[in-house]
Each structure stands twice: as structure tokens, then as C-alpha cells.
Image (cartoon, rainbow, N blue to C red; front, side):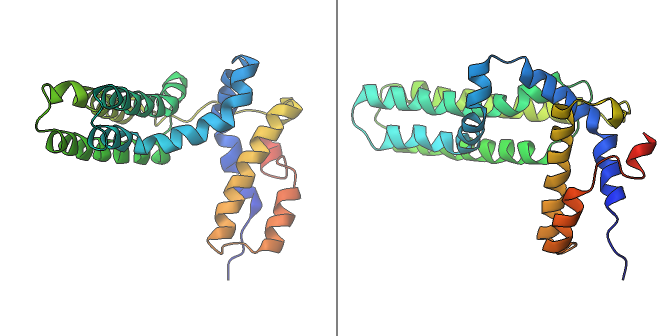
Length: 214
């Protein structure tokens, strides 16, 4: 039985370290308040996949035109913010890798937007201008399609520049070790490594053997 070699994972982390460090520089340029709110913003963005149904709930569940209008635009705005939260940093990267997680969230948001549009028109047949209520979700659907097309056409297959781990600061090394730890967590979840091996591999320096050749 072939055993897992941590140097293989080290090599992958180091090969794509440029992208991680590029993202770190962008985060460090943000105002301190945005950096503090970043973890919360991430989960809000994840929840934004359900934003189209916020619009539907406000429209179908209320007879107050003001609540309908505010709910429709709030749902559309939250959905667009969610999509752009993942898309904008990706678009700013010089070596844009295909992001299956963000793309899946976009597809789900697009499907939910299409369903929300159908429910909106079906739920308010007597409204004077149902198109106005449906417009925010329609805009969200356009944003979803536009970013998906941009992701497909704009992702890079070119390998990023190599980095030398000996030149990294402690903060930069911490980012790469976190990335490697995430890889180890996935391997542990798939049963490729045991919990004991996870602890051992997590303590091994990133610059071990193959990494030190960079």
C-alpha cells in the first residue's frame, strides 16, 4: 500500500504560493475595519445564495407595497453583493485559477434567481407593475451569468512564478501553512491520512526536502 508523501503536498502549495501571497497583499491593503469584518462578510456572502428567495418572500408574503419593494431590492442587492464578493478578488488576480466553489455558488444563485422570477410573476398577478418587483432579481441573474462567462473566459492555465520559501515573512509563511492545513483536512476527511498522521504532517516545515529546492 502506497503511503502519502507530505512533500507532494508541499510542492503543490509552493507551486501556487504566488497566488495565495498575492491575495494576502490585497487583503492587507484593505482598511482595518474591513479586515476585521472579513470573516462575517464571508458567511454573509455564502448566505447570499438564498437572496432571491428573500425577494420572493417579501413580495408573496406581504400586501404592503413598500415592504414588497424594499424586500425585492434588498434581495437583489444582497445577491449581487454575494456574487461580486467572490468575483472581484478573483478578477484582480494576475493568475486566475478556476474556482469551483465560487462557480458552484454562482450557478445555484442563478438557478434560484430564475425560480424566484417565475414565483414573483406567479405570485403577484394583480400587481400594477410586477416587472418592477422582479427587476432586482433579473439584474442579479444578469450579474450571475456575466460573472460565470467572465470566469470561464478569464481563468488562467499558466503556472504562477515560483517563490523561495526562505524569503518569506512569518505572516506569508502562516498563510501557506494554513493552505497546506486545509489540504490535509481534506485528505483526512477522505481517509487518505489518519488523524495521527494529520498531526505529524501539520508540524513538518513547509520547506522540507522538495520545498527547500525552490
